[in-house]
Image 1 (cartoon, rainbow, N blue to C red):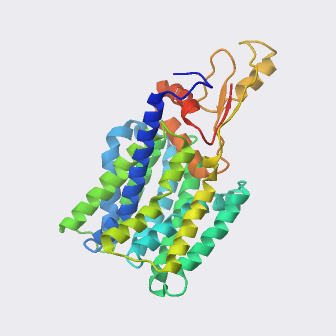
Image 2: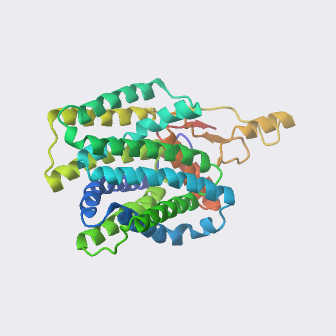
Image 3: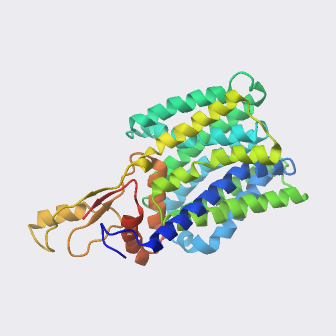
Length: 381
């Protein structure tokens, strides 16, 4: 691995390109999943569909994160259940909304969770948000008004359900941001999937809707959503986060609404009016504004480091305290600071990375991030 200031090795460039293409593929799959879900719930009721979808994803990921789940503390289970409650509400509202609205509307409105996350963090958790977050919030409100305004009354109920889903998903991200700092991400993910699957299963049983899928479209929809978009998508995201920055990860995955729009156009011949297109583009603009940290250039500052053991014990402790979780210290003081104030989504990605990787490769991953993180970083050496 090269030193700070040397050209980025070609191997790292290739790995970053592979990682980001993988993330783009995940965004495409997630976008096209809106069409798949809408078609599947015509062949299978919403509640059993969600039950089979999330329990299938949990079963597929169990071999990868089962050991983490076994070591999860009671507090970790409680945190995972809280996250799972928000996730369950989000996907139920989104899926019921897809019965009553168009795929492009559902895609664009769901994408608002990126904007709503820092807004809710400011309102309820007193987290500080940059001015661009409030500009993005105003931009997204204008886009939502155009998307769901006059001429779209037929979809209004569905659009409002999907908006509720975006709020729930934003709350789930905020809950994840707090829990992921103390508990393994893989175990928390499994708890959320299990909670979502079991709640859907119980509700389907209680309402008499629990049936075995009989149509091929239902089985194919479950395979795509639970295995390809669910388990495989998360594993690709986990791998990609080792080779690209959290902000770039969030920005690429934020293109999901665009691909939902493309999927509806290609597969359903769904056309939006000029007003709705303008609204959708305003929402996409607001998503990019929230993730604008990804456009900040890498800032390198060189500080003369003291030799190991130099200075008073208090000075040594002060130097050590500057290291963020997972940073390397070899001889001279070094710290990699990964600020998360601009976007909770990027911050969650970082903590997922550090908790999912085995301990013996975390230091290598952090050292590698010095080379690959061209954005969203402050590096001190």
